[in-house]
Length: 160
Image 1 (spheres, rainbow, N blue to C red):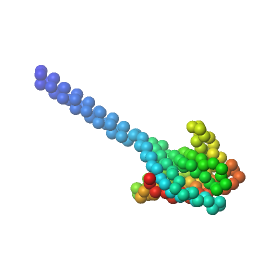
Image 2: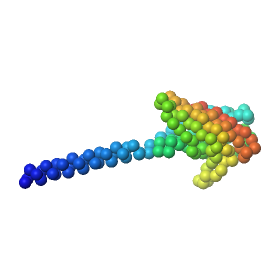
Image 3: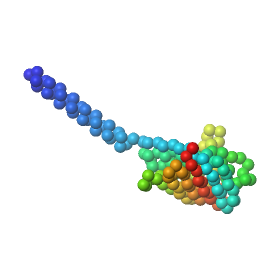
Image 4: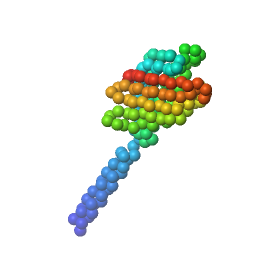
C-alpha cells in the first residue's frame, strides 16, 4: 500500500510540474515586450528648407500591438515657429525583417504635450515610413498642418 501511495504522489507531482510548464510557455508567447530607445539626429523640413540639429527622439515599440510611439522633444518645423513643442506620433505600425525594425503608418493625428495633457498638434500625417537598423533611425514623414500647408520631414539619428 505504501508503494502505491508513493507512485500516486510522484504521478501527481509530475503532472503538476507538466501543467505549470505549459502555462509558462503560453505566458511567454503572450508576453508584451516594450522596447524604448533614445535617438539624437537631424530633422530636415521641406518645403521650408529648415534643419534642426541634435533633435532628441524617443521610440517606444510594443510587441503585443505591433505599434510604435514616436516622441520628438523640443521640435520646431520652421525658423518662424515661435515655440518648440514635444510632438507625439502614436499608432505607427512596425514589423521586424532581417533584424531591422520597419516603421509605417498613414492618417495619424499628431499630438503635443500641453502642460501634462495631450492636445491635437494640428499636423495630420498622411504617410510615415522608417527603419531602425544598426543603431540608426531614419524616418520620412509627409503630412499637412491644419489641412492647409504641406509639411514633410526627414529624420536621421543614431542611438543615444
